[in-house]
Image (cartoon, rainbow over all chains, first blue to last red):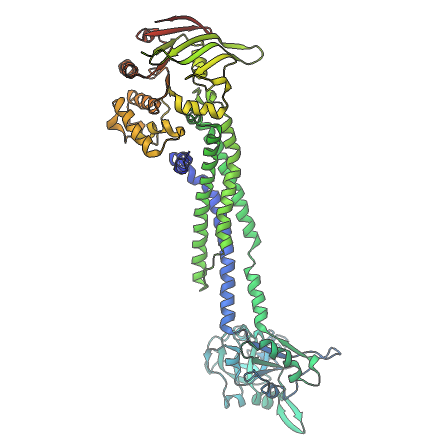
Length: 400
Length: 227
C-alpha cells in the first residue's frame, strides 16, 4: 500500500470520531506541554540571568580582607587600592570599608540589637560605575556630601529601613546621630554586600565614626575592606592571579580574591536545572495519556470489528490491519504531542516575555516531546493492533 | 458462455470445535464456471454462511480441495490468500458494511485499496462501477444520505470495481424491502449478463428460483444442484 493510502486509512478512526480522538490525545498533550514548558522556562530563565550577567560584565574582580593564619579577621593595607591602580589591565578600582561595631537604625528608639543585618560601609566615590549599578532614587555622594552626615542606602537596606523615597523627613540613626538620606541604589547583583549596606563617605566615616588608621603618625580614613576592580577584557585571569600579592605583599594569604560573576553564572546554571517535580508530573501525565490512548484503541478495535472483517474481505493482510491500527495510535499520540509542544512553547513565550527573558526552547524539549509521543503511540497501540490483526475475518464479520 | 471453472469445491468439509465436533460442511463438491449466476439456498444452519466464508477464503476448509481461479487455496499462505481476495474475489454483504464518513466514490474505490492500484486509477474505476450500478449521480454523497437499495448498489459497485473472477453475495436483499430487493436482483442479473460470475447465498427459495442455477444445502451437504 502506498504511503498516502496508509495515512488515509490510519486517520479513518480519528476522522470518524474527532471528539473522542481529541479527548484521548489530551493526556499526551498535557504531559508534553508540561515537559516542554518546564524545559523552556528553565532555559529561558537561565538565558535571562546570563543576559543580566553579561550586562553587568564578567570582568569585575573583588579583593576582600580575609582571615589571618590564626583565624582573626585580617585587614587590607591602607594603600592597597592605590597599589592596585598600578597593575596592568586594571581600571581604577573602587573600594568600600566595612565599619564594624557601628550600626544603623530607623530612629534612636530601636533596641540596639535590632540591626536588621545591615552594615555601614564607607565608600569611594567611584563605586557606581565599577559595579555597573545606578541610583534608584536621589543622588549619589559627592566630594561635599562625603564629608557630611549623609548616607546612600543599598536597595535591600532601604527596604529594611522602610525608606522608599528621598526627602528631608527621612533620616537614619547611624552611630549615635542622624544622617540624611541622599539616595537609594538600584540592586547590585555583582556586590550583594552593597545591597545590604548604608554607604557614607570616607571623610564622614573618619569624622563621625572615628574610622581611622595611623600611617606614619598621620591619621587617615581607612583602610578599605573590599576593593572592586574591572580587568580589561581577556586579562581577567592574569589580573586575578596578581591581585592578592599586589594588595597585600606582606600577607597575600590574608586576601580573598573572587569573581562575583562566577557565582551568578553558577546560580544561572542552577536556575537552568529544571524543576524535577513538575517534570515528574509531566511524565505522569504522559503515562496517563498513554493508558488513555491504549484504552481508546482497544475499544476502537472492538467497535470496528466489521470494518476489520470488511478490510480482510477486500484483501487486507494481517500485517496491513496491524499497521493500520498501530499507525492510528501513533497518529493520535503525535497529534497530542504536537498540540502539547505548541502549548508548551506558548506558555514559555508568555511567561518569558513577561519577565523580559529571551524565549529559549531547547531542541531536546520539542524533539523529545514528539519522539516520546511516537513511542507512546507505538507502545499503546501495539497490543490493540495485534489483537485486530489476529481477529479471524469470519469473527470480525459476524454482526451479532 | 465459457466453460472454464472459476470456483471448484471437491469434498470440502468444515468441522468446528473438538468436544463435540460440529460438522458445518460435509463433503461439498461443485464447481462454478465463468459467467454463471448461481444461488446457494438453504435454511439457517444449513452451512451456507460457512460455505460462503470458505469459498471467499476467509476461512480454511478442514478437508477437501478448494480452487479459486485455478489456484489451490490450501497451498496459499495468509498473505497470498489476501492477495487472492484483493484481486480475485468480490464480496457483497447483507449489512452493506459501508464507511459512513467516506463518500460513495471513496467507498467504491476502496474495493481496490489492497490490490495495488494507484489512487487516481481507483477513482476512475469507481466512477465506472458507479455508472454500471446507476449511481453515478451519487458519487460525492455520504452513504448515510442514501436509501437501503442505493447503499447495496454502492456495495455491489465496490465488489465489482476490481473486476474479480467471482462475486460472492451473502443475502444481498436481506435488509431491503421487496421493491428495493427486486431492483437489486435485477441489477445482479444485468451484471451477470454483462459477464460477471456471481454466487448468491440466500435462505429465500422464491428468490433462488429466479436464478438460472440453484444449489440447495441442508445440514452441511448439497442436496440438489439443478440448472
